[in-house]
Length: 192
Image (cartoon, rainbow, N blue to C red; front, side, top):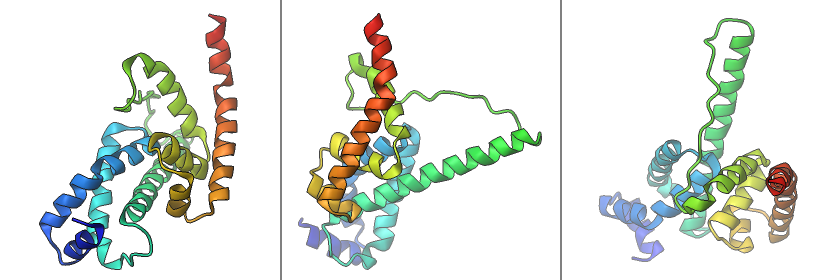
């Protein structure tokens, strides 16, 4: 089934087309969301929300971009909205703790496990993904799409609705920032 046929079927409300949509794009959506939120359970929930939004919004899809580009945009937006919401909740909880009306929250570190990372590289991957999490949103999204999803600069430019030169700039700044974030880890590791 071509994208145009799939879109037409989705617009007619076909459950079979929705099933094809999920089967076709589930890995792309899940990996994109996981690369941004870095929590497996949340990524699963958000991926489901992405498909629900695609299904509910398909009549508004004008076909000005590829279907995959549109789905990437929804995936990124959902992921970043989740991250912003999580940060706002943390700030509010911190404020409540400061004035003594909140419960003390334990500071737990969530270990991040990406399905595509070899077991012997887990430690480095955890450190890398923590560093990626520190990047500004636009740099993080560009880095995840290019480095973990393997997309071209041109495709990322279309997804982010910016020029290819802007994506190159985002990647350059992301790499520079990651070098700074990871310098201490690798200098300590080399001392061993």
